[in-house]
Image (cartoon, helix red, strand yellow):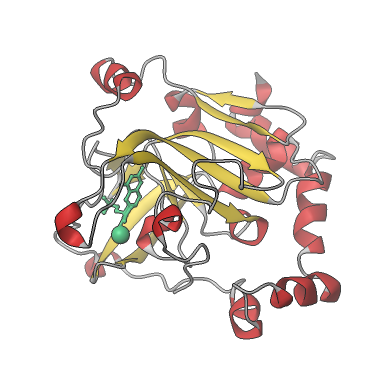
Length: 258
Ligand SMILES: Nc1nc2c(c(=O)[nH]1)N[C@H]1C(S)=C(S)[C@@H](COP(=O)(O)O)O[C@H]1N2
Ligand SMILES: [Mo]
């Protein structure tokens, strides 16, 4: 499938298939759209204007010697165990939903795509931060290659793990499938990548193997690990408890801007 080669994906990006994705992105800059979004409770003018800016990037010398793993560190879900035990040989990342051409990427496909490497600071709500280096394809071009439809408004990340919560860390947290969602501003942000590598090596299970999101303008819980499926939707209300993410369903903000 030509989409999966480096040249192929770039070819698609340079050609006409760009239109739906770019149209969507361009739309998000129009005054009407900005006003409409600002009127929604979670966005303020300051935040929205600042949202296109890049998160700070650091030098190799700044990388933290230890980057804590948090939340799920070793998913026990059957499907994930199968993939981890077989080296992710028959694992596929699906990119589907409101797209014209759903994609199904093997781990090798993912590793062969044009990638971005970035050294950024991860901020967890639990009060720790760490600087790490991440590599992977940008989400935007993947969505363009899949032919994102104009009806798409959000991107949902379906993860492999069921998170049981850690009751000792802040009250009863019911167990549930981990998932996350972002809007198209963040989906097409240049630093939003599907990371397959950390510090130049394939992701470890603790950090989200075989791939995890980096959503650099937002807090740690938005950075979904163990991503199995990326779904374009018009609303995230039908997933789990309806607030757009595992932690959002338990009271955290959906827009977790830093
Ligand atoms: N699938 C999944 N993604 C997840 C979590 C999780 O439990 N499951 N925890 C989140 C939280 S709260 C943080 S701080 C980061 C931790 O990423 P790390 O383990 O690479 O430090 O992953 C986020 N993504
Ligand atoms: Mo976190």
